[in-house]
Amino acid sequence: MYIHDYFMKITLTILLSFLSVFILCLDSYSLTAGVAKGIITPDISREPIGVFGNKMNKVGRDIYARVLVLNDGFQRIVIVTYDLNCLDVATPILRERLKKELSIPIENFIPLATHNHCAPIQIVPENFEYGRWLAEKIYQLIKEAIDHEIGPVSLEFGFGYVYHLFSLGNAPVDYEVQVLKVVKDDGTPVAILFNHPTHPLQIKEQNDVIDTGHFGYAIEYVEEAFPDTMVLFADACGGNQFTKNMMHAPLPIVQKYGKELADEVIRIAKNKQRSIDGNIVSSFQVIPLSLNKPIPFEDVQRLAFFYPTDIGYIHYPAPERDTNWVRSLFKHYKEKIPFPQKISDMICTDDEFLIENNPDGREFPCRFEESIVVKIGELIFVALQGEVCAPIGMRIKDAFRYEHPIMLFGYMGEHNLYIPTREIVRLDIYQARVIQEQYASPVKWSPTVEDEMVSAVQSQIKDILRKK
Image (tube, rainbow, N blue to C red; front, side, top):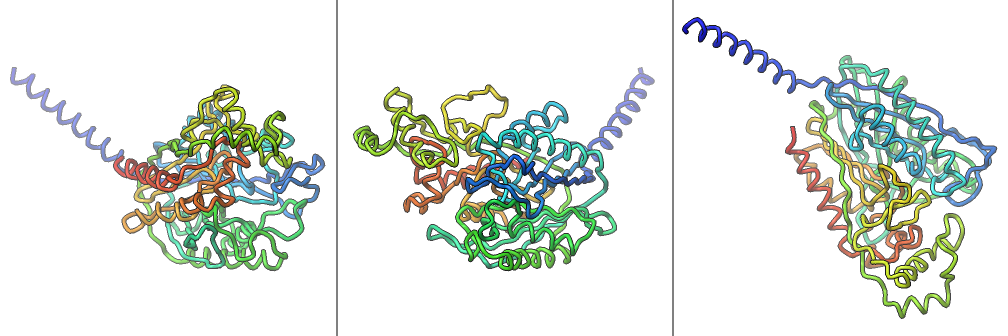
């Protein structure tokens, strides 16, 4: 009896020792990182359609996709940036392949655009083939980055300001530049990821030329300061913000703004910043933002005198595209289709039309508004779908920045629908009208959209901060 108890105690002690070591290992995370970069310039002989609806038939500078992979030993996040206005067609393809072939869930894949306006746009059928080619190209870059992970690495986060911006919608300006640096044990940088919340500045009168805009020049200037380092840029939440030259300027001005941004990134990156250490936890959600009630049918009938109601939805860049919402409104009334109350009630198709059902039965249909939040140690990393206006981003950052470093991006995933502020909705300016004029929504935004967006993302952040 005593011998049996003795051996039971020894066995239990050994098991507890192994368990303690196991738990200690769970709490000890060592990051590794992988990077990759590839040219995604399209076949120019096909004359792809650009962001401004024009055929592109010249290449001024190549455009790129860049990949940064971070792995804590238990899970991996994949950050992809690309010199495009948005990824669109390639997004659901990549989400499905990464899940099935590499076991990377939707919340661990973060596709981010530079918001480049001098590249093919993904919402016209003529460019869908290019979009599918992009999916394969980016998938191979992701595999390359994973295959070449190195470590251990650590992270540093810092921020500063560049002031060549202005805003629309009676809004304060967000000037913040954020920088995440990945470094080896010897201090050598592996990657630098930075952002700035504004539309890109493009070279004047070159809408037919593939180029990168001032963000691309900023990347090159940072690369010169940090050779052998992967430098990535992705746009932040600046849907209502622009450079002081708006969106087009002569080449020297484009280069000037790129240099100003790069100088601040270099300053931040060359100084020791806040160290980040810890495990990776991520989450994904679709935020059901509210829509307004439809206008009365009597008003719709009056609109029918001025706009065609029987030509269906027209894709970009045809001028009738701006009146797709009238045909959608008429269709809802005529066929007694329930009007959407939330933006998530509708699916966004490849050609940017909002419809009631998933036409392809795809595993990852595009619904607004998607948000991904990743916690890396104490760092909060937020990626929001579409062109989120700056005051929304500022409110999210300011709620956490004094207790946690927080890095915030827009233009994640599919489609650049503007997410407006209450004031922009009240003024009914461009950023508020896009949901109807470009996306064929039969109804406008509710004035509550800003508060709902901020509240949902802040709740998502609070939930992930509670996770270990």
